[in-house]
Image 1 (tube, rainbow, N blue to C red):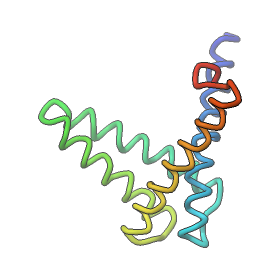
Image 2: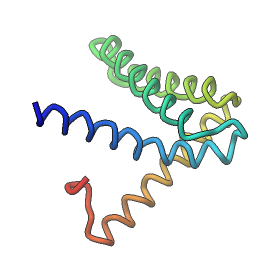
Image 3: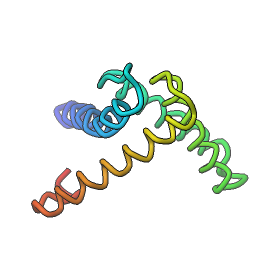
Image 4: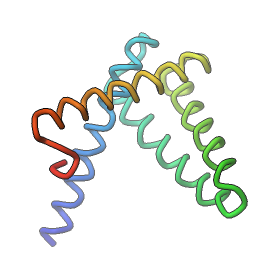
Length: 115
């Protein structure tokens, strides 16, 4: 039982940490950005991507990737009330912020294996 509780807590902490780059990048493109909205966008985007990938992958992995990516853009567009280009900007900036954070953690000796 303790293992399940630790697992659930670690998923929630990971979800919060993964939402921070989305929140920071969304603040650049939307005045309506908040950590809560970023958490919703991250969760819904992940679920949409996963479901579409499972449905479309048996036919074409590449098409599944493209449609899943468009679904994530649509989620960001809807949650943060921005246009398609701003949604793409949020995605790109969040990716860059994530890479910067991972590089900083690696320099500090705190690689992904510790997360």
